[in-house]
Image (tube, rainbow, N blue to C red; front, side):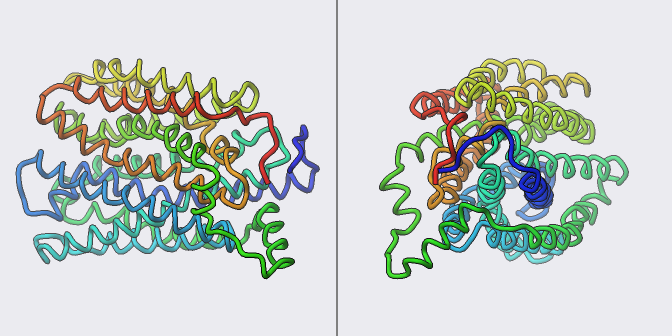
Length: 439
C-alpha cells in the first residue's frame, strides 16, 4: 500500500502538476461539449429536432433527448472502466476526448426536423448516445489518474477536485458563450444558425484536448499492476466488474448513493433555465449570465470543501452538503419569481451550489478511496454514472411535475429522495481521508 506523507519529493510534485493540468484541461473541453447540449436542450433543440408543438412539449422533448445521454453514461462507465482497469487510464481518456469532440462537431452540422423529419431526430439521439458513452468514462478516468499519482500526498481531494471542477469550467464556458450569442443575435438568427456555433467550436477544442492527453503518463498503480500481470501471464483474473460486485458491493451502493447529489446539480444548473424562462418568463440571457456567475462561485466553493475534507474527513463534509442542499431547496424556489433580477437568481443558484460543492468537493477522492486499484476505474465509473442515469432524469421529471401540478412543491420530493439515500450512503461507508490508498 502507498504510505501517506506530508509532501511528495520535488520531482513527483512536478510530474503531479503536469498530470493535474492535463487532466483538468481535457475535462474542461469534454464537459463543455456535454453541457452545450444540456443548455440548448432546454432552449431550442426540442423545437428544432421534433415535430412542432406547444412550448411545454418542446421543452419536455428536448429534455428527453438530454436524458438519453445520461442513460448512456453508465454504459460508457462500464466500457471505459473495464479497459481503464485492464489496459490503462491514460489510453481511455484519449479515446473519450475523440468520441466526445467528434460527436459534438457532428451535432453542429445536423440538418433539422424541417429538412429531414424523423431522420434528424434519430441522428440527434444517436449522437447524444455517443456523447453519453464518452463522458461515462471521463469523470473516473481523470480522477483516477490524478489520485493515483497523488497517492502519497495528504491533499487527494483538493488535487482531484481541480480536475473535476473542469466540469464547472466547461459549464461556465458553455453558459457564457450561449449568453453572448443570445445577447448579440436576434431570435431568428439564433434559431437559424447561431445555435450551431458552440457545437462547431468543439473542432478546435478537440484537437487541443487530444494533444494534451497524449503527453501524460499512466499512473504508478496501474504500471505496477501491468508489471505483475506480465510476471504471471498464466494467472487468470476475473473481469473488473465481476470482481467489483463480488467483493465490493457495499462500496458500490455507497458510491451510487453519495453521487445522487447530482440531482441538486441538475436542479441548480440545468432545470433552472427552462423553469426561469418558460415558467417564470424571465429573460434567457439574464438567466444564463446568472448561472455563469454562480458557477464561478461554485468552483471556489468546491475546492474549499475538498481541502476541508482532506483536513477533517470526507463524511462530515458530505453530510453537511446533503442536509444543506435539502434545506436550501425551498429557499431556492422561493427566491425565483417572475420579478427576479440577476442578483436574486445568483443568490438562489449560488446558495444551492454552496451546499452542492460540499458533496462534490470530496466526491472523487472518496470514490477512489473506496476501491482497490484493480477495480478503481470501474468502481468509480459505476458509482458516478449509475447515479447520473437517475440524476439525468431530474430536469425532465421536474418539468413534468411542475407542468402537472403548477407548483414547485412537487419537485421537492426529488431533493428529499436524494438526501435520504445520500446520507444513508455516508453512514454506511467508512472514513477514508487519512488512510493510505488501496493497492
